[in-house]
Image 1: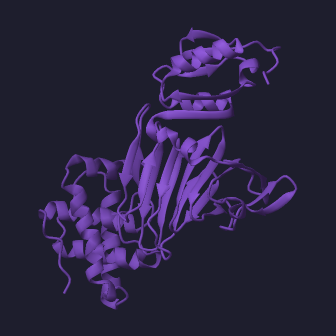
Image 2: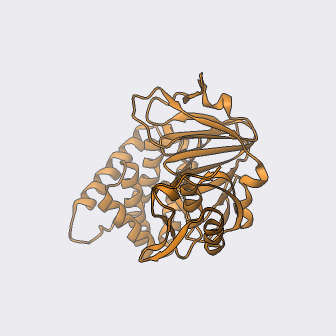
Length: 357
């Protein structure tokens, strides 16, 4: 017999049931999302109440397609729609059965998608100079570089993450029946049990594979494997990405692009993961990339002031956030001038200067 979510007061349950019904009816509009977030933050007990309602469907899943449940579904949806369109700010005094109806609604509406846990992706974010390691619910581990945003949404059938900014490393708990995907730009990296990192840098996606195997898909198309061109070779990207290698491809491409240019380089695991220990190691990298990575830790950001500075290639080891050491090295080795500006430290070298060997 189905349990009713009675661990909370009736008014809270009723409001949670309406939100559960509304979420099951489709994506929220921006305004509704703000209302939903405000309700969650208004009282710490609201989120557990909603979770209890969502969890109730697991106990009644085998009733999901019955005529009685379908009738409850339609009644719950109709009540939610009427309530959401009212502007009086008053909530109706629903009976507890509507909470059960909302839970059943989630079964009917989302069983096909395998949804079984939270409906809104959870956001993990680090600020400038901050790193974070997160243990995910499936046993996977997420390591965030500074100034990074990752969103996570798990369902019964898949584990979806989105890298919106910065860099993150993923240690994936093996589960062949539940793919683990990370979306960055227009690319989707899919794994079932492996270790890799993804970085958004200079309008490019950098994927470093440490162990295992990953597949690269194009999220703007039909989910086909990403085909890349490296020199004269054209082949699926995952055939090039072996442990100890880094794949670099554009983050955004025209939808009609069937083959995209790519760069594959050897990757030293120690060097590529040095940021987790607070060090930034650069090996013949553009100053623009060096500045972008250093700025994830810098209290005063660095800016490139002219084309002469932009053409520089940099190698070296620096403590994360030690912009003074980087500036001193640039001024000593490349005759770079650093000027304090309103928005940070601007680096100049002169338009006509030739880049060093």
